[in-house]
Amino acid sequence: MVKEATLGAGCFWCIEACYKELKGVIDVFPGYAGGQSLNPTYEQVCGGQTGHAEVARVIYDDALISFEELLEVYWFVHDPTQLNRQGNDIGTQYRSVIFYHDEEQKIVSETIKQNLTDQEVWEDPIVTLIEPINNFYKAEDYHVNYFELHPENMYCQSVVRPKVEKFKKVFNAKLK
Image 1 (cartoon, rainbow, N blue to C red):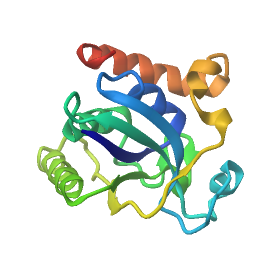
Image 2 (cartoon, rainbow, N blue to C red):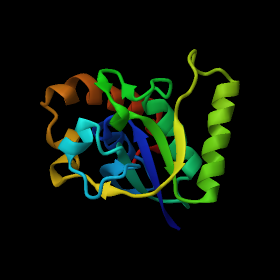
Image 3 (tube, helix red, strand yellow):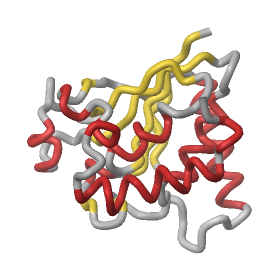
Image 4 (cartoon, rainbow, N blue to C red):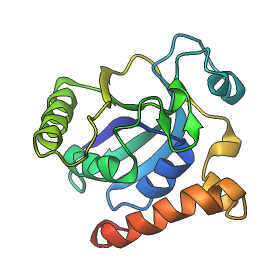
């Protein structure tokens, strides 16, 4: 069955580049979710006044990859202990957030977050929010496949590429 997951883990270029490589993932759309503004632009979201987070909408076949497996990648590809930031990307638009689409996703997300907290995987507390999806707006077309289309970009070189390379090593068996 085709399902959707909406995940915020800092810059959407990073998570899009990782998720699109996974078996069972049909498509990934960078976008904005969780805010109050209608049809926000990248500039508005980056300005921090819309309340939206940069997210990836992951369309997946749950017969081939489970929501739990998507979350395994999610917890790996970002630092869930950084409040409203990922590295030098600072602001609520870069918050760590799982927007659940149904009660099952909510329960799975909360259970895994609690297990990671109990296991003290990170030295600092996990600040990841778990909220119902209230809206989603696709990002502008130039953000789609950004890493693939702009590997020479300095941000891609210094931030995206290292994350993608590390992800590919760890999740090699799950790649397309």
